[in-house]
Image (cartoon, rainbow, N blue to C red; front, top):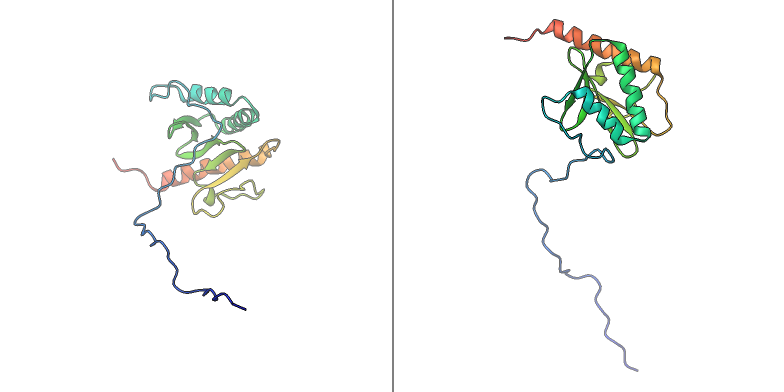
Length: 173
């Protein structure tokens, strides 16, 4: 009876040498999914309020309604809040400094507060970007409602923080 020679298990493996990566890994930036194209006239001369109106209309679904509702709440807090259109199509609300941005993604409307980490949030509205040292965000999913009173208090506090910082360190000319 003949036996077959045993195959050796183990031994040197033929492997490809690993590539050495130098520098940061290149990744594609995330885009606001489902936001559609930016409104036609995004020039510096375009009225930001109109561009925000167009974005809300383009969304046309629950995200547009949610963004419109949150925008109305923000603007109802203080008549001196300024609407801006920055970073290639992001609505921004400011008063003596940035308050928050309003972004729309496929499954969420995100309101990112510029100085959110410095704001008191007793009702725990912030539910995103909690690990950051500066910003905090509120992610609103379909069929979710935000407590209007608590949200407006957060906007008021952001304005107060901006004004306090402006008084502490006046800009040099």
